[in-house]
Every structure is written in C-alpha cells, then in structure tokens.
Image (cartoon, rainbow, N blue to C red):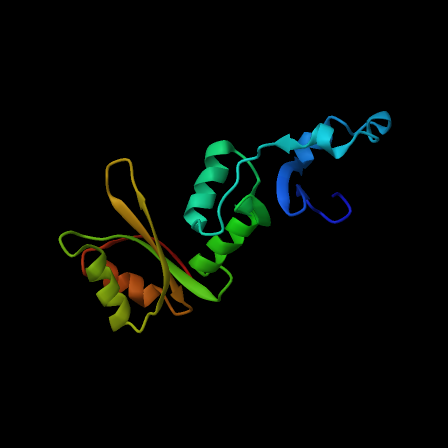
Length: 172
C-alpha cells in the first residue's frame, strides 16, 4: 500500500467483497512482529458500500457522514470498483473548472433582479460562465462565486456595482 500510495484495498474472493483494508485498519499492526497477521484479521468487515448506480452526491454524503476515505462499489454482492475522496475531489475540481484558465467574481446581487441581473451584465460584457457556487451569509444574503472564462473583470465589477450589485471580490 505504501509503495503504490494506495490507502484502501478491497478484499474479495471470487469477485465477492469480503472486507476492506485501510491504512488506519493496519496502522496498529505496523510493528515487525505483527506483520505476519492474516488480512482477515485486520480488514474491516461489512464496510459501507455504494452501488454503481449511485450519484457522486450520494457517495460524497456517505463518505462525509461516516468520515471515511473511500467506498467499495458493489453490484449484486460483487466488487466492481472503489470510489475515494480523491475521486470526489477530482470530480469537484472538474465541475468547478478550477484547473482552467479563468477569472472569478464574487457578488451579492441586488433584489429583485438577483442572479439573473448579474448574469445579464456578465453576458453584456462578453463573459462566459464556467461554474457558479453559492453560499448564504449569516444575515441571509446569498453570495455567488461566479467562475468565468478568462477575461478582464475590473470593468465587469464596475458595471455590476453601477447596477446596484455588491461585488465582494474579483480574481483575474
């Protein structure tokens, strides 16, 4: 596991999942005299699993809820794969467009136009949206984190503020 940077090893026999060996499940057996133990003695029995038909959201919720680093993917009691927190992070990075050359504007839209008004101004300035994230401030205001294809954002930020939207930050 250490040599290949693997943190989760499903244990299967004839394709059927029997358990899961993780870094933490074997850490207590790291002394030389303990290394001859059988895998069945250190594996996690009945690990939490997910179906191949589950959504990424469902897998993420299970990993978060149970504070685990990975889930065996099981169909009809047969191991078909494993999804890890690293896989979920990769999906999030891809979804948010974080590795693309981009700009970002963080804005609290004025009401009643809301996000529609902000997006209209972005379009008028030639902006192309990659992704939008949203958070709710303690006072109930919605902050939108809008990732755009690379563009000059200062003129856009000025136009948003002139229209009454509150620009929190910009990233060129």
